[in-house]
Length: 226
Ligand SMILES: [Ca+2]
Ligand SMILES: [Ca+2]
Image (cartoon, rainbow, N blue to C red; front, side, top):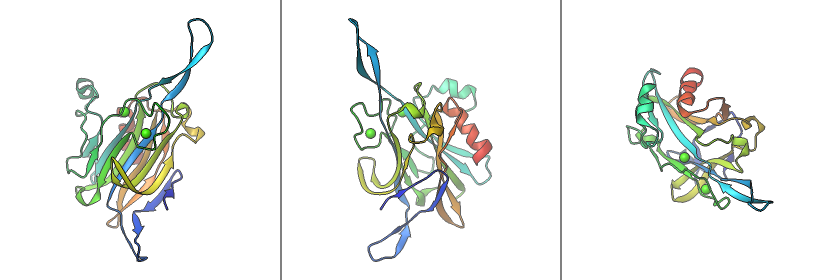
C-alpha cells in the first residue's frame, strides 16, 4: 500500500517483495497531477458562466554535488535562455548529465476536464545511474501562471514504479493543496532524495516559499536546504 506522506516525513526507499523480504527502490517516477481552474466569467447579456483557466505548474529538479559548489539541473527548455544567462543560469534541459533523471516535458494547462488520474509532469529516476558525487536531488514546483497553490483545485505528487505512461505500483503520495500554508504561495520545495550511509532516502520537505520564479527557488534551495 502506498505511503501517504506528510510534510517533513523521511522515508527509506525499500519495498516489500512477495516472499516477505525487502529490496531497494531504485527505478521510479516522481509525478505531479494538477487541475485547471474554473472561474466565473460575465456573460455579454448578463449573468455568469463557468470557464476553464489553464494552470502552468513546472516540475523541476536540482542535483547537488558533495562539495555543494557543483550542480546539475532539470528545468524547462522553454525558459528564455538569454534571461537565464543574465542571472548566471544555464539553458533549461529535460535530463540530467549522468542520464539518471529524465523529465516528460512541459505541461502548460493542467487537467481541463477534471482529474484524469494521470500525472501532467513526470521525472523518471534511476538511482543506479546517479553520479556518485551527487548526494542530494531536490524536486521543486513553481507556478508559471498567476494563481497560488491554494486556488488550484487539486495538485498531487506521487512516487511510483512504472513509466510516464504506465503506473505499475504507487509507492508514496503527497497532497499539496489541502494545506492552508500554500495560500498565497507560487513556489514549493517538494522534497529531496539524499544519500545516507550509502543508501538513498527521501525527505518530503513540502515547504512553500515566497519565491515568485523558479530561479529564486533554486537559490533558496542552495541557501537554506542543501
Ligand atoms: Ca508546466
Ligand atoms: Ca492529470
